[in-house]
Every structure is written in C-alpha cells, then in structure tokens.
Image 1: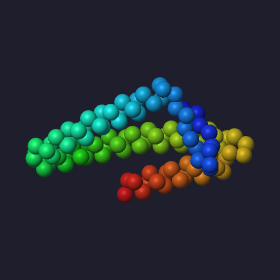
Image 2: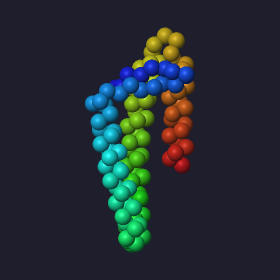
Image 3: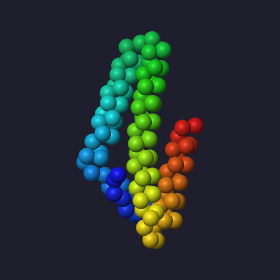
Image 4: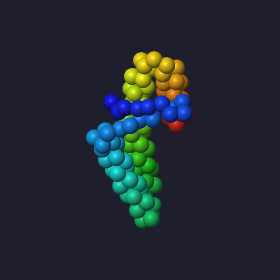
Length: 105
C-alpha cells in the first residue's frame, strides 16, 4: 500500500517506483491501443472493429482507475486511524469515490 500525506484536505499518495510500475505499464499498453485505434480510423476500417477497440480501451482505463481508487481507499483507511486525520481522510475517500461513480455513469 502506498504511503500518503494530507495536503490541503486531500490525501496525496506517495507511491514507490515498484508501486508505480504496473500502473505505468498498463497505461503504456493503453497508449498502444489508442495508437492502433487511430490507425484503424485513418485506414477506414470496419466500424464494428473500431467500436470493439474503443470498448477495449475504455475497459482498460476502468481497470487502471480501480487500481488507483483501491490504493487511495487503502491509504485513506490507514490514515483514518491516525489521530486528527480521521475526518479529513474519510471526506477525501468519499470525494474520490463520488467522482469515480460519476465517471461510470
């Protein structure tokens, strides 16, 4: 679980390079998928193929979001156990969860 600190009423994660690596690898894979989609559009590929690629990119981004949210919530729960940080940590976790729920609508 990444470490974090509260700055301006927000939990800022401090990930190690080892914690960042899988997220960055996923994002590079998604970047490649988006480049593939750009090529498909440029080459006037079949619409269904393009839509399937768009769905794959969207699903991959949702998975990255879940990892980021999971880390944030875990850190927030840990920080909520610290004196004087409970309310701020819970408020910030709820703010992140609300934003994630809006994104999935």
